[in-house]
Image 1: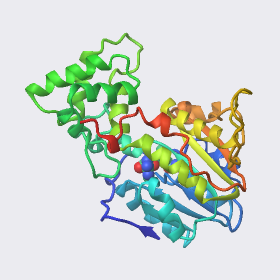
Image 2: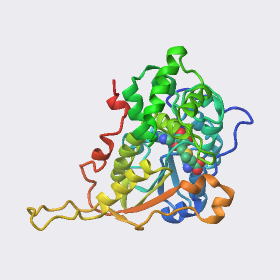
Image 3: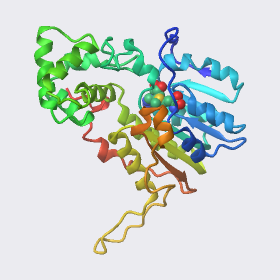
Image 4: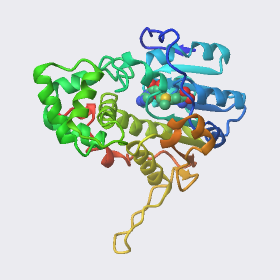
Length: 344
Ligand SMILES: C[S@@+](CC[C@H](N)C(=O)[O-])C[C@H]1O[C@@H](n2cnc3c(N)ncnc32)[C@H](O)[C@@H]1O
């Protein structure tokens, strides 16, 4: 079944290369799909991870994706797995309300594979990439404010915050200034125009990554509230997993991984206390961390999929303790510009 909230457009015919699922073997061996099991794939994409789970056992998968085109492309897989796969067009921050409606309130596994897919990056008209010229958009869900709205309307301080915090760009001051100067002449419409202004603002050395990389990352994270989504998604997974159920999360950059790592640590380790501090009864631990260090892709995978180089997989197993009420990521997310706290 495909549950859609809007009428999705189909992807471009003969469009971009299919997305290769990252760390597929490690994901399947962490989630250990079993017959009769229920697994939530929070980030369906091209469905590579979902397919591997459905092929490994006679289980069911409830998949989410906020991108209407991606959900439209899932029709074939939904038909192929005849009733074992449901794909919902929604952000995974809404998983806690939606999953129980599909009978997934006691899940055996929840998988997150954050960020955008190769199809989204390679379709110029989605405006995610500085490598192809396209409209300056970057919205996964095709709704809400676009990257063009941000660079054309936000003030210099707000642009500086977004680019320095979410892009971890040391030269954010110069980039923000250059954007303000350029838009006095002409508002930004295309990715190519922004990439050119950023490249001129940052003098890079030969061999450096494209100077536009970090600014584009910042805008993409901002317009899709990607870090706020991760915070809500992890809390929802804690509520939806049954005892013994597995949380698996793949991150692609340090901002994402820091949230996953902090969440798992907070839920699986007794906080260290000073012996001078008053004794406080710690809440029962709701997860057991499966490995101390994040897993990374092996050499064989890197040969065929260089994109996997920055992937980090963290895995934790749900205990039988109740889900906790506190949000261990609130302090980390607070300084991060988000759409809830629009900086104007
Ligand atoms: C890296 S791809 C996932 C690839 C997938 N695991 C596969 O094997 O093909 C990430 C996907 O998650 C979707 N996505 C990203 N953030 C999301 C969110 N907050 N809610 C729902 N979907 C999201 C994107 O639209 C994209 O299709």
